[in-house]
Image (cartoon, rainbow, N blue to C red):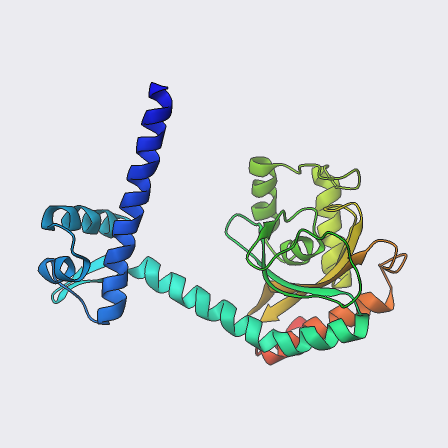
Length: 268
């Protein structure tokens, strides 16, 4: 009982610390200018000693920086803002193409990126009107890289040593009987994905779902994102490799890449 009480106290303290940190950040966002300690206290209603502790922690984590005019948003917050803007722009640019692809394929369309841990992050999902049954993908949710067509389409353009390092740390966990769990086989799969320009998932993440995905390239190249067509296994082409559906997703990814400033001549 005492241990549970201690754990509950720690959670409450962590929540309180997070809320205080957000209060300070919100005050700066609303002011749009640097604030001194006294001004932050006035905006947040935090005691001076508490506000100072919060500020010190935020400075150490690079969420804040100290200027001659007071405390201001740090490099990490600027990076967050740039990332949010970049992903919003990507989603807005891609959405008309995704809707068109959904209408062509009559199956569910996804747009995703990889996070720093090489997990797939879903940015957009354009559902079909057909029944699909349970599908785990949700906007904002994540999925493993190694057993999804989206993940493989992007990982194929990452350096081999980065992918190998990820495998050593996270391993190729089996989610279905079809999941690739051997490192050499997985690296061969990425090589083939890169060569043909798209990836497939034959029930490797969800037994009853199959997918085909192609990478999106930015101005400087590289697989900055990917799009996929996903559907129930019994409605998807057999095989997916070489299918007209695969060509549809590749062509759409190329059109989105061009809209983002990528030139196909960069591949030559």
